[in-house]
Length: 264
Ligand code: 48H
Image (cartoon, rainbow, N blue to C red; front, side, top):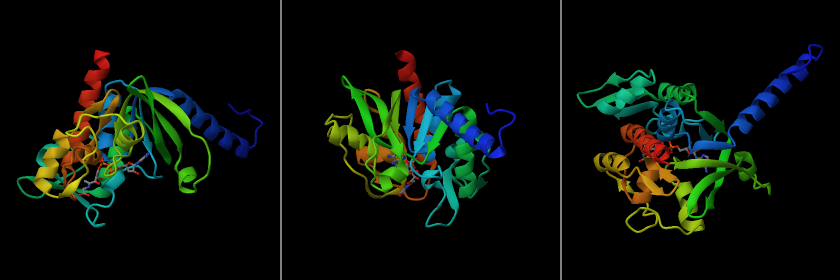
């Protein structure tokens, strides 16, 4: 801690630097790394941290929340089905019944509520940090390679650092960036109909919502996908501005990871 004689400028800078690096050091070897703080990643982070696992979420943007903030076409209301509304209620997020099947949610309340809930459950969120690669040892995905997103955006030639993890969840949304690394860089065959990434199909809300949850699974030892990433990998239809499938996918992947880690 800073000395009592230190000027305020020294104390404040010291507090930030010491506490940040304590947090970073504390998260160099973790149970679960989640890439992407969208709705599926945040629900998974909440559930896994609540189960007592050491969970870190890496989000390349300054603000976690993924595609939640913008509702549909920047109209900041989100829709969810009845069963997914229950998940939001656990986070203290208010939903407004629309008809007998759907609820609307203020998208700012939903994004901020999911972020707060994941954090309060014990997950650590590293924002502005991009996962640029994965670690593979002996046929098992066992880490994330991280760097500042601004470094990547400015194309600076700066080497990353590495965090080891027992499980890695790709919650990067449409591009499934992390599974991409496994398939296209490491050249592994994942648990999909072709062993590769099939790519998202056009809009079909009902089917997309169903398959997002059905497609949520372990893809390779140590590697999992949730939300839009899971659906992209398995070639599901997109569903547009309805988020129940994302929330349920986050919950499902958390259950799968919990079972796998407790079996080890
Ligand atoms: C760190 C990264 C990296 C990286 C990306 O897209 P998301 O909101 O994710 P989901 O799958 O939980 O939710 C999808 C939903 O928002 C959506 O897009 C829907 C329902 N679309 C329907 C449709 O038809 O279009 O969030 C993913 C997050 C983002 O915040 C990215 O910034 C982040 O992942 N991210 N973070 N390292 N390499 N890649």
